[in-house]
Image (tube, rainbow, N blue to C red):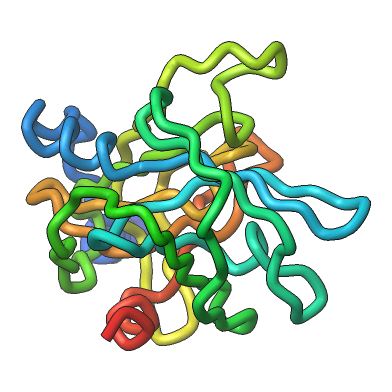
Length: 217
């Protein structure tokens, strides 16, 4: 019995060392949230007879960053991109994919119209369990299949892991949020959503923090 108690004690101690209780998933400040949502756009792209929807983040006056799979297909950029900004501005002309990296799943869209935003500040890779939040448009252009636009949404969670290839976070991303931003609570962009969850318990997957910094240099 004494040996068993000792073993249980060791296991509990190891679990305590390994398992860190996540940071509180309280929402960010209203100022931080409003700024992140204002920079979040809905994206629609066409590739011949195919189409895709997703989200993106305004990084300066003329550029939007998103996931490569939203605006490219089989190594080629979309022939037609539509961007909706704050639900009241729909852009259909003067838009092209400036560059992309399919392996890292990141792309940069160039827009002729001045979007009116200063250069976005990028954040360093968060620590495990740091609070983060995701922004994006459900179903891409609008927040419902019926086409009713209600603005971008935000989901809070915490950072799990990141390296030079990808990042993960405990936020369930849904259809349309691919290409949207992952933000720290200072309002700095730390990743771009690269995959949506097919299961309710699945982790969100994003572009590597280091890849984001290099790509936007």
